[in-house]
Structures are given as structure tokens and as C-alpha cells.
Image 1 (tube, chains in turn green, orange, yellow):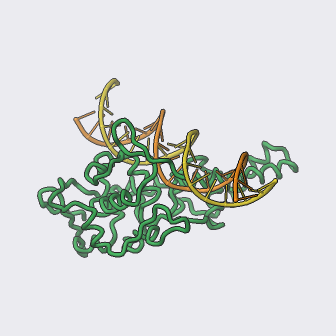
Image 2 (image 1 turned 180 degrees about the vertical axis):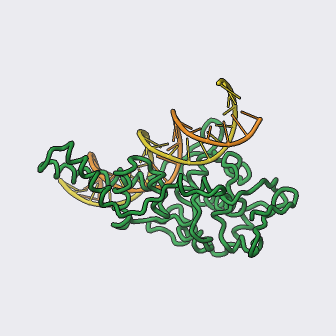
Image 3 (image 1 turned 90 degrees about the horizontal axis):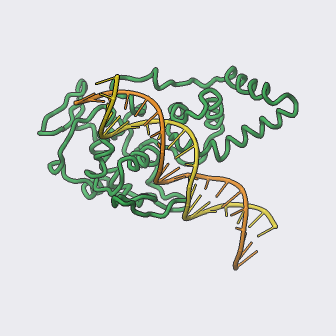
Length: 248
DNA sequence: AAGCGACTCAACCGCTCCAAC
DNA sequence: GGTTGGAGCGGTTGAGTCGCT
């Protein structure tokens, strides 16, 4: 299911992510955000390229990511959106909270594509293939009851690049996908004590060269972590040289 | 029980886009 | 306007798993 770990020429690790690496990445992004994916592995102590870290976070570790079976409703939504947008998986994913574009893409190729094609084939027996496929797509669009969220029209200046959860995720939300080992028991984390975990796997703040954090960077932060820095009207965050950055 | 092909899905690769200079 | 670097996207890969014979 996963690739054999190996190292490339530059010494960066490739392949399967170890639980230890996941912990480091979660700890770092949760604590400091992802202001620069390229630099992140260096500060997080990961022998990975930034791209790999980003992918792992976005597709697997990000808070709110749903694992497991797709509901009939979700599949229906994917089919409808694919009929409308084609292979624009990120667009489709933006309409399916908790699902990554990569996961949707995989699910489409593994299940829905066949199903969709099969239904097309059976329909073609009754009608000509071209017009039928076209009408099928059209009928999907006509009957489309899915409320399409266009990320390009629905962005705020501070969150344009990041899908912001509806509400601040709780710690349990953050780790909901990794607290319980999966049936196959591979690569999943069990965290009994978040505080110890954070202390163990993140460097002291004093050791960091802090950089600016944007709202997008903290959009994944659990509310409990943000609480000390948030008032009714302002959100403070510690940044370089012990400045306080007023976010609102 | 063993062999083998199909399936699954995490991860890599290469490309494009966009902002900063 | 050209160059550069980072982020994001979509296509593809390939090892593990499943299920059939």
C-alpha cells in the first residue's frame, strides 16, 4: 500500500511517513503554522522536502480530515461536481468538507469512474452514445441540488489559500483521525497527553526564529491553543522579537 | 495453503500559477 | 517585461491487501 522508505541524493527521506515524523509535523504545524513549507522541515526536524510535508499535512494529518467510507451523499456530490468541473479535484474537494483532493481523486478512479462509465454504457444501449453522455451530464447539472461553493468567489483576504474550518477545531477534532488505531494498525498515532507530546516534539519557543503568522496559518490551530492569545476584539500571537501581532 | 491478478491509496513527479523582486 | 522561488494541482506510480482459483 505504501512505498518503501528510501533516501534521495540530497539525503531527504522519501516514501512512507513514520509515526514519529507525523508527530513532529503535527506538533510543528499546530504550534507554529505553515508559513513556509519549504523551510518547515528544517525547523521541524524532518528530513523531508517541504512539498512532501505539505502533502502529508493536507491529505492525512490536517484537522477535520475524514477517513474511511464515503457516504452515498458524498459520492453523489462527487459525481455531480465532476460532471460540472471535470478533473478539478481541488474544486470538488472544496465542496466536500473533510475530504482531500487526493482522496477524492483516488476514490473517483477506484470506484466512481467505473460506476459512472458503466451507467453510461448501459444507457448507450438505449440511445446513441454521444448524445446520451451529453444529456446525462446535462441532466446531472439540471438536477444538481448541490450547493456549489466556488473557492475563488468565496474567499476572504486573509484565508484565500486555506480552507478554514467552520469553527475552531478542538483538540479532539485535531487528532480525531489518529487517536484510534485503524483496523490495520499502521501509521496511526495514539496520544495520551497532548502537553507532553508538544513538549517532547517541539523545540522551545526561545529556540525559534519566529516569523509572521497569518490568519491562514492559524486556521488549523485548536481553540485551546489560541485561547491564551484571543480576546473578544483582538487576537495576539507571539512573533519574532517578542512582538505581539494584532490580527484584528 | 499457495499462487496470482485486481484493487487500493499514500506518495511522488512534473507542471502551472502567482507573487515578489 | 523577465526571472526566480514557493505553493498548489493533477497525473501517475507502486507496494500492500484482498479475493478468487
